[in-house]
Image (cartoon, rainbow, N blue to C red):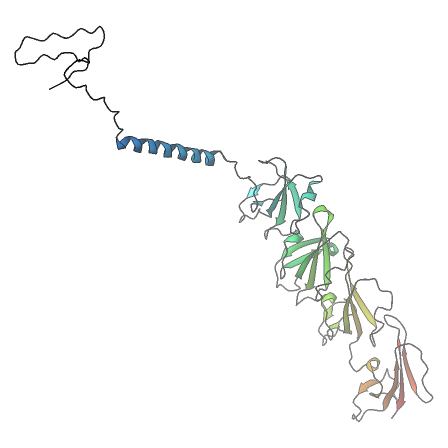
Length: 377
């Protein structure tokens, strides 16, 4: 049986057609014999509703994350590792491009002068202001790339360079051609040009040192040696020969060869004459230096003839003692031509010899001179 809800106030009950089959339902009252209807329960949301809510929440969170990535600050256009041109207002290039001669080593806050912002980086040789900053005023600290042919800071051991104007200009070049260029041993960072704090001292094989001005007034020193086929006196070795006309090394058998290399040394002060005071029989010297560094290479030379009397030691034998044509020459004491013997050798000119001895004296020059005393045998 259906129990209709109680009528609301003022409601007009619907009229029913007369029928004996449909029972008449009377309004419920407290005194009604029929039980009260149960109150209706709230309807539960179907599971699909919860899925929809969860999806909406997830989509909202995803939207927040997406919004973060879309609105974060952009990377600087000239970022660390990017490559630039050498222009005063640098242009960015792919690092493989031949115009990409500098690489951004660091981005630093502005200082004045702005080179000071990059002085803490030894590799930096140039500082420029970022022409289009995205984070305020920024200094770009630059290091040279392998495409940079003239910045000394980009040189590496084994590179070859051409040197012009006594080291005032350098340029990376091809190794191995005849009369080849200088070979880089190392580069050093010094406080200023000219360099006066013993350039390349930690690289004893260095024969020539050149200094190039760099960022902030400091200096990049290039420690070099001549190429193997070079004829520069700076690259000479003991026993090699040279010409007193060209003052270059030359084959000892060549007719122009006049001197033999007796010693090679480096020094850091301007030595007064004699430059070869401790080198026996030295009669010439070559000094390699330039105005921008304090490194000097002194090459001491003597007569090319290894049997020259000037190389004598006490007890050595000579031939030609009794002759009048030139100086006696050293020979083995077993040689049948030996006719004299060296008794004394002094590293000073014009020392007196004993009675009955002949004397050969060489005046002071690059050395203090020498005196050799001999007797006939």
